[in-house]
Length: 252
Ligand code: SF4
Image (tube, rainbow, N blue to C red; front, top):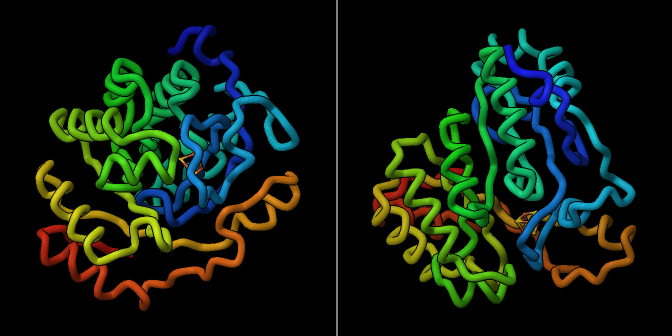
């Protein structure tokens, strides 16, 4: 049994999405935690960036979130699914994220976390034993370009990625493919070199979409990617082929 301190802990979340098929294996519930240390210019969830409640955030306890997640236990069991923590960056609220993962683990639920990897090493390492799968966003292979697009270089992110691989975790790198930022063929080669150098063998490509555009308008924020056309898998066949040539089984 978990102590009351753990199940009563509150975290700031902005959504719980049921029946997700895109954030790990099987049918999943995705819990979106608020707060992100990056500022990606193409961010589709600008409401996730601030750790404050704003219009979309609410405080929820571990106990309540676990209760909502367990409503779908049957679907997890039938589909090989589970729960994914996403954000923002879930490890901005590391203590709460760990409490939630611990409580889900106690119920035998498969746990994944979608992370930017931009979090201090001790929070990152102490979370690893509490997840079965890491969905690890890699936004640029080149540190200077990474900084231009997200506001920070990729040094800490790549150290954490390496640490997860060395710890033997199941890591799925996920690359948002963004027009004019990392969608060149030389970028595909750069990513493949980076990932294969870390001993990784696969990556998921997430083509740029415009789902976030209205949110910027609603929040009164300028959007750097307004009117930039979405990308589709058929636009990225040669891009994907470069990964495969570089030893990375890339898929959409
Ligand atoms: S890491 Fe994700 S949530 Fe954070 S700014 Fe970038 S796209 Fe948005």
